Length: 426
Ligand SMILES: *Cc1c(COP(=O)(O)O)cnc(C)c1O
Image (cartoon, rainbow, N blue to C red; front, side, top):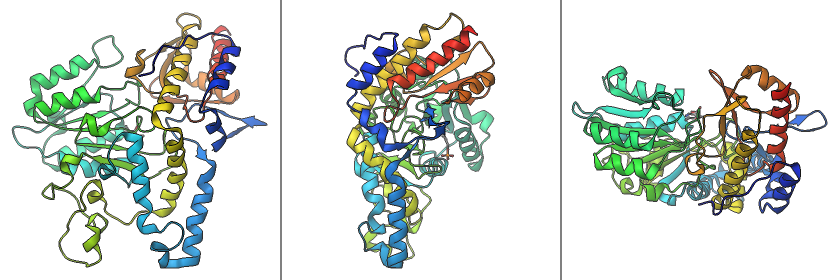
C-alpha cells in the first residue's frame, strides 16, 4: 500500500527535506493552530480534536447570514439551500470511507448513531444473543452495548464476549478473533470492533473479520472514530453491515461535530428492517404529505431522524473540502511515512525509556502511536506542554501521539522526539 519503505535518517536535515518534498505540505496553511508563546503549538492531537480549518468560520457565518436574510426560505434559497446541505457532505464523507453515496449519511453524534444502528442490527434471539467486541473498547461503546443488551432483557455479563490480547501481548491477533468466530459464531448476534482501537492504536483487518462473521450468520459493525480520515477504508467492498464514526477527530469538524453512519447497500431497500424512525428519514417525495406511516428513504438516509443542524454541517464542510482536495490515498501515504518516522526516532531513544503498544506493521495501525514511558506519564505531559507540545493521556498510563498528515510535518515529529530525548537523559 505504501510502496517502498522509506529510509529514514535521524538528523533534522532529513525532516526538512521530507517536508520540502511533501506534496501535501500546503494543507498546513489551511488550519488554525493554538498558540504557544509567540508561536504555534506543536499539536499531535488530531486523534482527539482536529484543528479548525480556516474556512470553517466563513462557512458558519454564511449559514448565519442566510438565516438572517432569508428566514425560513433559507431551506430552498441562497447559495446553499439547507434542504440539500447534508447531501453533498454525505457524498464527500462517502469518499473518505470508501462507500457509495447511498450508504453514508452525516447525522447526530457517534454514540447516538451506534445506538440507532444497534436497534437495526442487534436483534438477539435465545440461540443467538451475544456481542463480540474488544475488551478494551472505548467506554462509550461499552456503555451503549451493555444498555442495548439490557434493553432486550439480557444480562451484559452473560452476553458480551470481551476479547483481550494474549497474556503478555499488547494487541489482538487476527487469528484469535477468527478462532472465536469459528468456535462461537453461532451464538453471536453482532460483532463490533473499534477500528482503530483508541487505546493501543491497533487497526483491524475489516475484510477478514467481516467475512468470517458473515460466514457464521452474524451481523458486523465497526466504530471508525479513529479510522475515518486516518485509514484508507473500503467500507462497501469490505462489506460490514454498518459503521459509525465521529468527525471531530481526524475529520476536523469541530467539538461535538456531526457524525457519520454507513449502512451497506444490501440493506438500502429493506423497509422491513427494524429502526427508530423520524420524519427526516422519510422518503423525500412523501415527507411533506405528513402521512401517518413512515416510508424510509432508501439507503443510510432512511435512518435520519431530524432536520439537520446547518451550522454544524457548515463547519464540517470546510474540512471535507480539504479531504476532497488532498484525497485519502495521498493522505494515507504521507501518514504511513510520518508515523514510521516517529517510530524510527523513538527506537533511537535510550533503551527502556519508552515502549510503543501500537503494532509496528503500518497495515495494522493508523497515524497514532500509544506510548508507555518509564517515567511518570503526567510529568512527561507537563514537560511536553511547557515546551509547547500537545499530546494526550489515557488512563492508566498511555500517552498518545498522533501526527495528522493534513497538518503535521516531519519537522514536528523530529522536534517532539528531540524533547523526549532531552527528558530521557535528564
Ligand atoms: C471518540 C470516541 C467516541 C466518542 O463518542 P461521542 O458520541 O462522539 O461522544 C466513541 N467511541 C469511540 C471508539 C471513540 O473513539
